[in-house]
Image (tube, rainbow, N blue to C red; front, side):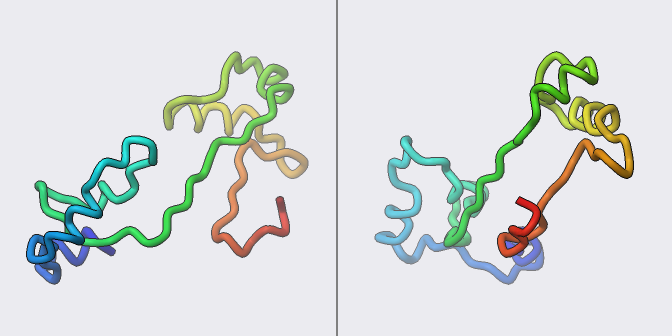
Length: 106
């Protein structure tokens, strides 16, 4: 919602809160910089309180059997691999969980 609210002029930068700005924009070289998404044009407009990292899980055997030499690295490669791997209704080349509480399929 950050970008929608920002575009509509509903947000103000944290520049009036120097201690908070320093904390949010400090040295985090050892972390994934999730907070950077809330900074636009050098101004911080939000605080990232939750961040979920998803990774690509793949089956090397299935990729090899489909003639795919390495895991997809771009959206077109991903779509191509998913299409090649789909043999519905028994096998699908792509699956996802839509929210953190949908763990039954994992």
